[in-house]
Image (cartoon, rainbow, N blue to C red):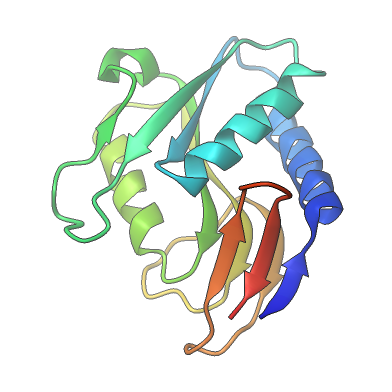
Length: 162
């Protein structure tokens, strides 16, 4: 196990991503941070807390539930569709590996008329199977297909390579 990002580095990446999100939404009256269930939502909460410290724009948190074992199952959200219709949405996940989870989350939001849709990840791997990219990323890594990246937000946050 190799540590990629320690607690201090993760905090720095979150702060930088938060500023980038603010800059991309500076002319919006309101925007949505939509975190993919589990770590993506935890990262969205951390981005929300960081943004609240300097961003005057109202932000709403949304949990996005993607069934990772059956990606064709309907994606659900903690907010009703009307809450993000014609809004700016930032879809957040912890790691962009193959792109499957993120692209199925994006597909859900593309079925709704939005102002804009951006994506944010803490760790971006360069092994995508789907044509998706992260608009905001903490770190990009080229790893082998056999290697696995894990982000733990329990206790002191850490990202590591297995």
